[in-house]
Image (cartoon, rainbow over all chains, first blue to last red; front, side):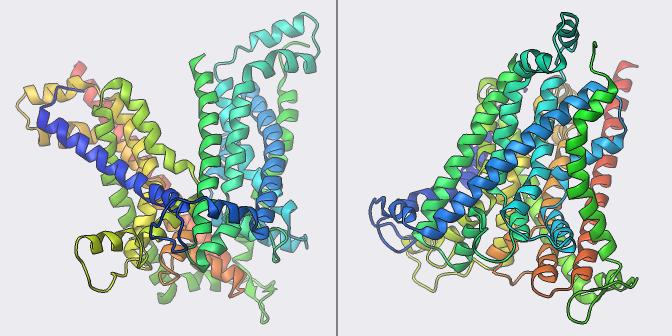
Length: 264
Length: 292
C-alpha cells in the first residue's frame, strides 16, 4: 500500500493491538484461571494443576470424552472415504448441474439448528433408537462436505494424463488409484480428515438433538454445555483449555498440510 | 480402459450423494412437510393440512421475537464489520511478510470450540469476573455491575465468535487493492477520507458483504449464545425452534419457524449476491472508463 505518515502508521498499530487484545484476553483469562489454586473460579490465588487432576477422576467427563472420540473417529473415517470419492467423481466429470454443486455445499451453510431438528424428526419418524450411532450418521453429513471441498481444491491442479498413462501401462483402476492418484491427493485427504475430526469433536447442536435422552450418549460438548449452565467451576476452565489445545493443534496441522498442497 | 468414464464417476459419487440424500435432503423435506400439519392434542402430529403454523409465525408475539433476533443479529453484524474491517485494513497495511502471521493469529481463536469461546465471556462478565476486578482495582467500591445476561452480553458474544471471519473476508479485497489507485486519487487532490470513501471502500464492498452475511446468518439462527450469555432472557429464533422441539413439543410450529429462518437466510444470501454483482459491474465500468 501507499506511503503512510508515522501518525497513520501508529493509529493502525494501535487498532491492530486492540483487536488482538479483544480476541485473546478472554481466552487468556480462561487458560490462566485453569491453573488457579483456589476454588473461586475467577480470583487468582496461586499456581496449581489440581483441576487437571480432578478432571482425570471425573467419570462423567471421561465417559463423555470417550463418546466424543468414538463419534469423531467413526464419522471422520466414513466421511473421509465418501468425501474423497465424491471429490474425485465430481472432478472427473466436470460437467454437472448447479443442483449437484448446491447439494454438496448445503451441509456447510445450512444452520445447525435446522439440520438438527430435521434429523430428529427423521429419526423419530422411522422409530430409530437415538444414540451414538445417530450422532455419527448426522456428523458424516457435514464432515463429508468439508472433506470433499478440501480434496477438490487439490484435484483442481491434478494432471489427469498421468492416470491415463498409468492405465496405458496396464495398471488396473485400483492400482492406478493406489499408486498414482492417492499419493498426490494424500496431503489433502489427511488435511480434510483432520478438519472433519475437529468439527466433529467440537460439534454441539446436532449431537444434542440426535443423542437422545440419557447420559449414555452424552458427548464432550454436551457435557460442557450442561456444566456451563450449572455455573463456573475451575474444572470447566481446565477442560476448556484441553479441548481448545486439541482443536487448535489439529487444525494448525490440517492447515500446514493444505499449505503444502498449495505450495507444490 | 483409459480415462475414468462418466459412468465410473457416478459410481464414485453415489455413496456420498446417497448419504446426503437420505440424511439431509429427505429430513429437510420432512421438516418442510411437517410445517403444514397440525399439532396433535397430546403433542404428537395430526396429519391434516393447515397453514396455521405459518400464520402463527406472523403472530405479534413471535413476529416480535423475529424482529428482536434481527435487531440483535444486525447490531452484532454492524459492530463486527466495523472492527473486522479496521483490523483487516491494518493487517493489509502491515509489512508484507508479517501479514500471513497476523492473519493466522486473527483466525486462531475461531478454531477453538464455540461453547468454550462463549464460556470465556461468562468468565469475563460475571459479577466477580475480570471486569469487576478491574473496576475494584481502580477504586470502585459499589455493587458489581450486572453485565452478564444482558442483550449487550449476547451481542458481545456474537461479535467475538464471528469476528475472525469478517477479518478474513475483508482482508482478501484489501490486500488485492492496487496501491496506485489510492495514490492517483490523492494526486488528483482528494483527501485521505474522500479517497477511502470513494475509492477504497467501493472496491472492497464484496468482502464486507460476504463477512456481514456470514455474521448475520449465523447470529440470527444462533441459540447457544442467547441461552448462555442472555441467560434465556433474550429469546431469539434459534431458542424458539429449540423450545418447540424439546420442551413445548409443537413440532409443526417449530418446523414452520425453521423454514422462516431458511427463508430469511436465502433472502440475505440473494441480497449479497446482488450487491457483489453490482460491485463487480462498478469495477468493470471503472476499468472500462480508465481504458477509454
